[in-house]
Amino acid sequence: MSVIVEKVSFSIKDVKILDNISLEFYGGELLTILGPNGSGKSSLLNILSGDLIPSDGKISFDNMSLKNIPIEKRAVTRSVMSQTQRIMYDFSVKEIIEMGWIENESSDQFSFVQALDIVSKDCEIDHLLNRSINNLSGGEQRRVHFARTLIQLWKKSNSKEPRYIFLDEPTANLDLYHEINLIKILKKKVAEGFGVFLILHDLNLAFKFSNRVAFLKDGKLVCIGSPLEVFDEKLLSDIYGMSISVDKKFKRVTYY
Image 1: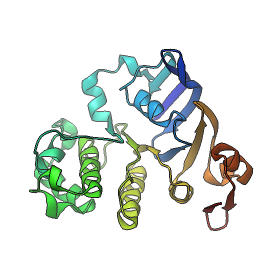
Image 2 (image 1 turned 60 degrees about the horizontal axis):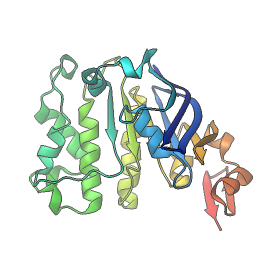
Image 3 (image 1 turned 120 degrees about the vertical axis):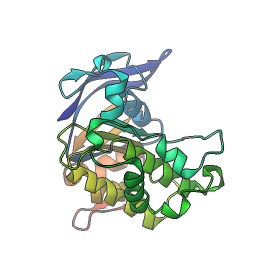
Image 4 (image 1 turned 30 degrees about the horizontal axis):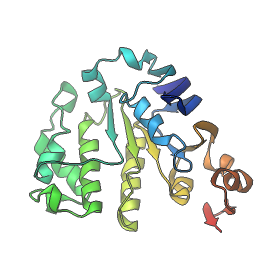
């Protein structure tokens, strides 16, 4: 179970956003993408999720070209949490989450009500279900959209079907407690066989919780590997243009 990216480039007019990116992403791992603003992280996520078409290169999900996977098949194998998700109408939290629910044979004995109960409690929004999404704080709204992302891929606990979650800055606007809770939920999904593709700006979160990390800069893949392999003081200082120290014993990064 894997996603393979082969020599992917993406340009807007004459501006190259991604330049010859190649990597593999596996089920059962949390891969975090890091890099400065404008390095191409969100564009790469949107290409992998099928929301953008690359200018060059190929993307395969489990040995099938992404462009050949029907939309309805994509909907039950991958879910996406974007960086910004504006809601124009006054939906309740329950209605927003229900938008992600897909009835299929893999849902087995679970009804939406049962799945909603589990997901809303995990995300600690069960007390908000009847509230309007537009009356919530930014952090509460992020947790609601995270719950919708999770419920879209609700399947049998013993399902072997490939499932991938793509998240762009899901911890934005969250306090420390809910940041860690979100990461713990994702790690649980990884243990169930999900592949999690995560964009973060927080180097310390990535260091502590990722299976692998990849650094982008100026649209190019600088390196990819385990945090202990790639969290190098000189490398990080060069990428971010500032002094950065790395404590590998405690998996901690300090900025100057």
